[in-house]
Image 1 (cartoon, one colour):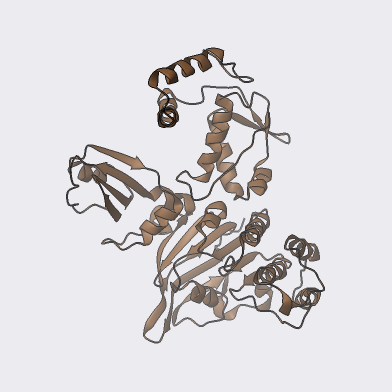
Image 2 (spheres, chains in turn orange, purple):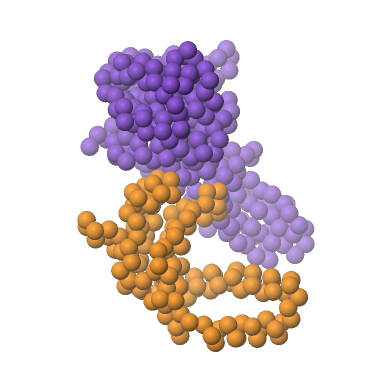
Length: 135
Length: 309
């Protein structure tokens, strides 16, 4: 699956972090897998209208963490899937997702019991996306 | 390989009557990349740019551009500098095509395909009369005329002023395009922090003629931090906080923006006994507003103290 990267200015998150976050998330959820190609620094900078140094910085961070690899003359590729988030980071990201889910569900007058059941049902039917890991 | 900055000023000062428009400016713009020159209206940005180009004589101090004193810029150096003014001066009776032909004669190097590319981007008809162009179209034409000589140093004075979002985006794309080559430098003044966030490597902040910051954009961003303190009751009065930029009070909470947040800052804040203390991410715009807000302490982020950009 092609990875669609997008950035927002005016965000609390610096642009290079927005890029690394999206790639990490795509790897973690199996949207992209080993061997998938990312656009070159220059191509991505021109598509997203960003300073190439910003893109380069994001790629450097991702390469340092072992998520991507630049192969000379061939491009940038997703490499072996290592553990993408630390446990602590994972919790930090999960927290707002859970809060949003619960908040919206209760606002729509679902009972706690209904919500619990729906969650259980969805979870039991869940199929991992390509390359995704299931516990 | 050239380590010499493309722009360097020492004590550059200009008075208009008794009032200093620019005061003791020491600015260094490294070669390569995009440098954003920020500040409110009337902070001295245009005055600085005019002095850099030798269009205005400094009251004292001096500036160098591409290694030449600004008061003695030889024509060969001028040909390497592109300058886009705020007010897009053009001859109204010319056609778009004639503007290109006219301008090309002044430059030893002229890349017609760049001009054509920019004109196409702005959807400009070469046969149109300049006097009939819209503001955005004039800006596009001027940009094309400025880029076609492939300047080594491009100086843009508030290029986004009065442009619609599409034209502004085209302008930013051109800036990204120009700096494909690592020896090209763009120096632009702007109020559009979104554009700055997209393209700038370095920023300088001018406030009432005084340089308040000059550093990589990322350094600026990480230097300004925001902390939220929550309290059980009404928040207490704030003590002196090192590097305080701005404090705002809400119901049961205080948000504090400060420079160079560290253990010492945290200790002061903890002494207020908040229920919790949380570092909050801050956008570039909020960081900028906090930095230029009214506050007790003047803090500087200058390259001298922060390491060379």
